[in-house]
Length: 257
Ligand code: T3D
Image (tube, rainbow, N blue to C red; front, top):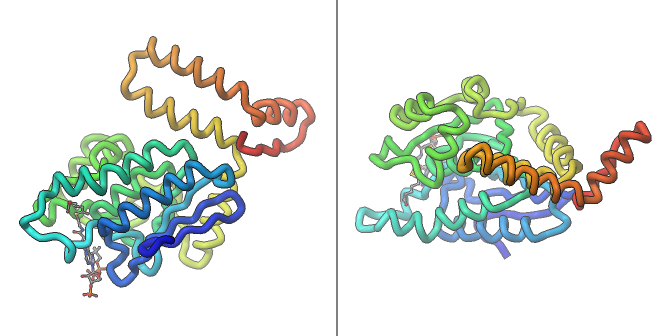
C-alpha cells in the first residue's frame, strides 16, 4: 500500500515512518504523496487519536532528494504539486501530531518537523535549515512555523546561517518539546504518544483550530469564534466524562468523541 513510508495503527496512535534510510529519508514526489495519503487516512480514522511522524535508520529526514532534481525544474511548480498539498493535509489535521525526531531533520525535513504539534527530539538529533546552503529559501511552510516557534530574529538567523542546531540547543530555543536519551527513545516516545492519544481528542482539535485562528482575527472576532469552539466542545461525550470524573474524584476515561 505504501512504498516510501511505513504506516501502522496501535493503541490509538498512527505511526508514520519515512522509509528511505539509505538517503536519510530524503523526499521524493512519491513520498510527498504517500505522506499526504497517510495523513488523510489518519484524519478520517476513528481509531486514530494521535499521529507520530518519524524516520527509519539514523535520520529523521534530509529534505528534498537532491539526486531527484535538476536545474531545468520549476521548483515553484514542484512546491505547488507535491509539498504544498502534503503540508496542507498536515495543517488540516485536527488530531495531535508528534514529530519523533530520531536524527537529523534538514531542509524540508525540518519543515515537516516544524509543522507537527510536538517535537520529541533524540539527544543525537539535530535541525538544519539547509536551504540557504544550496541557494534556496526555506519552503514547505518553514518560515511560517519557524518564526512562530522561535521568534523572528532566531528564525532569520537559522535560515541565513544554515548551521546545524544540536538537540540541546534546540530545546533551549523552544524547538524541542523534550529531548530524549537514545536508550529509552522507543519507550518514551510511545508513552508520550499514548498519553496524548488518551486525552479528549475533539477538544485538542479545537485547541489547534483556535490557536491557529488567533493569528488572523481581531480580538473581538476571536472571542466570537472561541465561543463557538466551546459550544462544540461542550457537546462532546468527553466533556460529560471530564465533569463526571471530577465530581466522582476519579481519573477521566476519555474516548475521543
Ligand atoms: O522543489 C524543490 O526542490 C525545492 C524544495 C526544496 C526542499 C529542500 O528540502 S532543499 C534542502 C535539501 N536538503 C539538503 O540540502 C540537505 C543535504 N544533506 C546534508 O546536508 C547532509 O546529508 C545531512 C546534514 C542531512 C547529513 O549529513 P551526514 O554527514 O550525516 O550524512 P551524509 O554523508 O551527508 O549523507 C549520507 C548519505 O545520504 C549520502 O549518500 P552516500 O554518499 O552514502 O551514497 C548522501 O548523499 C545522502 N543524502 C543526504 N541528504 C540527501 C542525500 N541524498 C539525496 N538527497 C538528500 N537531501
